[in-house]
Length: 228
Image (tube, rainbow, N blue to C red; front, side, top):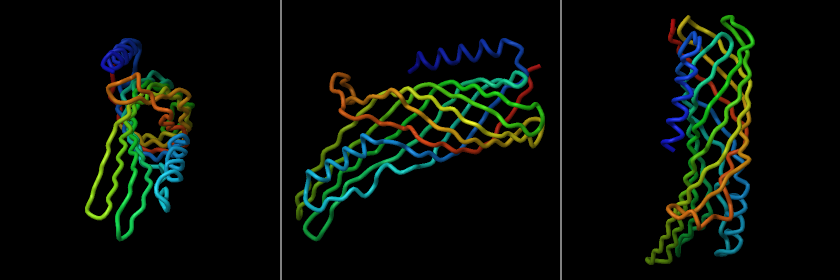
């Protein structure tokens, strides 16, 4: 991952050496919907093959996302580095007076990549088109808990892996001052490639992956710093 960060930083420095007009810092908070089809199937199959009465209570629902960007603006073109964090979880559960069973899967994904944004106008208000691409670094924590009367048994495991993602989006920007703007966008993340394996052992591959594909909406603020 360090090599990727260094490569992206070198790319940004190279772009900055061009006729860049402004250096930009950006933060967005958003909401994402996640496919997670293989994870959902795993929970469903596990519920059907375990104790009678086990129900899937959480099916990897949508959740908030956080996105940070560093870039440069050259006339109507904006390009830079993007980092995002997203998470969701799923759970099978059964509890009564005699005991409890719980299988919980917590997924988190950290995105690191590049983005290109084309502003249709140079005015205070401007629609834009955007494309982001890069890698998603996944961590999947699995926790299984069984209690029968006073007897408790727990098992934990962690899967990790890397996805490739593409995210086209459209949005609008409104400059409230010469050095700050508010921004809003809607897009779709597509993860065409993904895999998980046991943490620390790439040979023990999982039969399912963490698919973050789905709708993304976000809003945030951009700050501008003149470079010449």
